[in-house]
Image 1 (cartoon, one colour):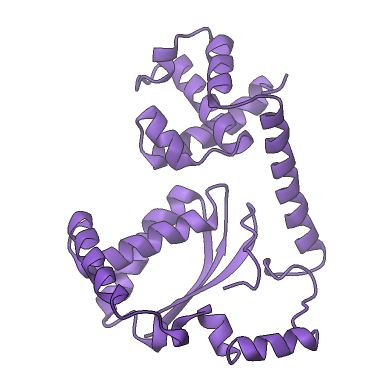
Image 2 (cartoon, one colour):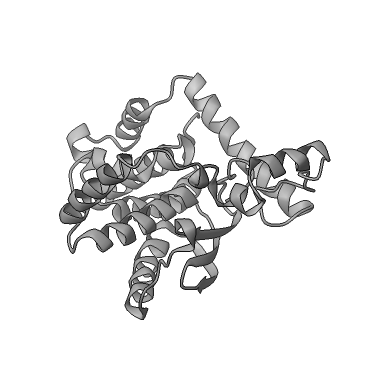
Length: 258
C-alpha cells in the first residue's frame, strides 16, 4: 500500500500487493491462481487496464498495472470481491451470505492491536518505529510516492490528473450535470429522450448514446457503473460507448462547453 492516498490518474503505473493477515495463504492450490487469472482476463480488457507483470506466491501476490479512466480502485474492487466471495460460496448470493456470517463471528472476538495499522505499519515495526522515522525525516521520498517513477514522468502524470480535475470542477461550476448533458445531446442529434435511453442500434441514436457516455464519463467524471445503471446497460457496453464517443467527438468537433 502507498504511504499516502494512491493517485489514481489515467496512465499512472501502480505496483499493488495483496496479502492475507498474519501471512496466511491466499492460494491453496493452482486452481485458486487460475481463478484469479481468469478474473483478470475479463476485468482488464473491460476497464482498459494494462498489466505488465504479476507474481503469485502462496501468501501474497504482486501486480504491475497501468490504469485507465475506470481507475485502479474499480479494478481491484471487482477482482478481489469476486475472488473472496467465491471462497464462501459457488454463487455471489451464497458467498455474500456466508461472508456476513464470517464477519459477525469475527466481530465478537473484539479489537486486535496486532491487526491495526496495515501491513506497511507492521512491517516497519509498528507506529512507534514509524514515528521515529518521521522525527529523523527518513520518511521523505523524492518525487511523488503514489506514482512509480520520478522526474518528468511524475510531473506528466500529476499534470494530467490536475488537468482532468480542473476541467470537471469547471464544468460543475457552470452547472453541468448528467441532465444538462442529456439535453445537449438530444438537441444536438435532434432525437427524443426515450430514443437516447432505448437499446436500438440505429446509427444516429447509437452515436448520440456514445457521445452522451463519453461526455458523462470522460468530461464530467461519472463512473461507468452509474452510467450502466442509468441506461440499463452493462458496464462493458458503457466502456465501448465511451471508446466510440472519443473519435466521434474529434471527427465532428463536438464541444461540450461550446
